[in-house]
Image (cartoon, rainbow, N blue to C red; front, side):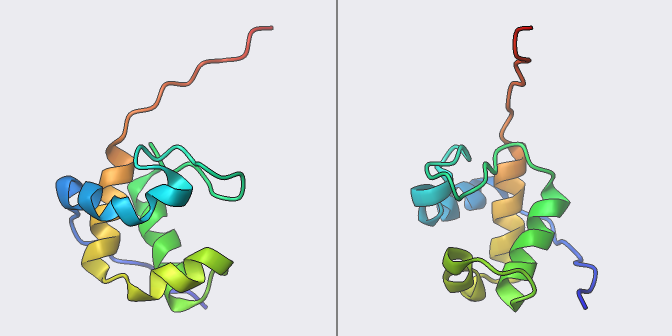
Length: 96
């Protein structure tokens, strides 16, 4: 059973610096570099905190994230979530 995650205030600049270890899969700009990794740019901050926390505690499973997430502190998670959620994205509808 997962418990609600209480997000601390993240630092976007610190999150950007920490995101360098995420860029191989998710890209520094949050646009995925590999098909298996989701885009993180523009995601809701609370969602990112919840997802990273669940990867860290093993509630959520993924081969790569199960290796990376356990070393993340609450502050790391908050900073990364603040950074990726702050990236503005454009939605361009498909032409019909």
